[in-house]
Length: 230
Image 1 (cartoon, rainbow, N blue to C red):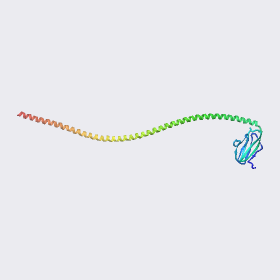
Image 2 (cartoon, rainbow, N blue to C red):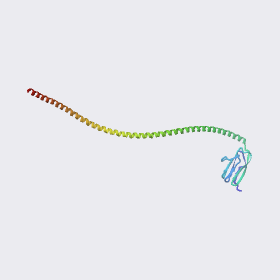
Image 3 (cartoon, rainbow, N blue to C red):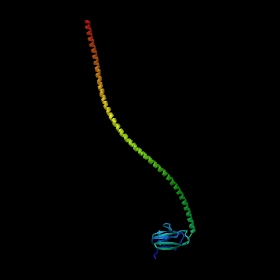
Image 4 (tube, helix red, strand yellow):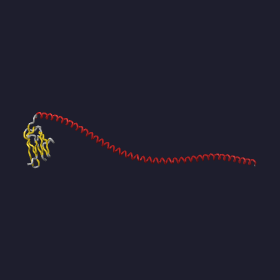
């Protein structure tokens, strides 16, 4: 019969709290006594590949025969281990009890810290919700501002076009004003010439009027003289 497991024990008996090596020759299912566990994963049973494993016999193991079951395919083997009372077990149990008390205190502290962290997480979640709502509100405001900015840009473009049109109108009006100034200067020049002409005409008209009066007076005088003669 092919042995599935070779138990390499320093002694067939193992004291409480001690360890022994278990060598597995091929892939097998191993089931230890509930008071024992593998050092590699702290389990008392499972599927393990070929190799050497350290088994821990806990202090809670009662003194006496313990059985290890090894199964591979259809083959099965049971190994007996004799657990003896360990030296200074009571002292070790006291130490373990102290460690347990210390661990409990650590657990309480960790639980307290966990509760604090959970409350902190709750506060942070609340802040996160508030920040999300604020971010959403800011995003909506940003969208509105972007829309207004586009509208202002459109209005600015229209204003720019209107300003360009008004500038062209102003240029045309300025050209018309310059042309009107030239015509006005020409009219002023003609008006000055006309005034000079009228001034001269008035002088000659007065001269002509005086000569006419003088001529009439002369004719009337001759006519009166002729009337007196006849």
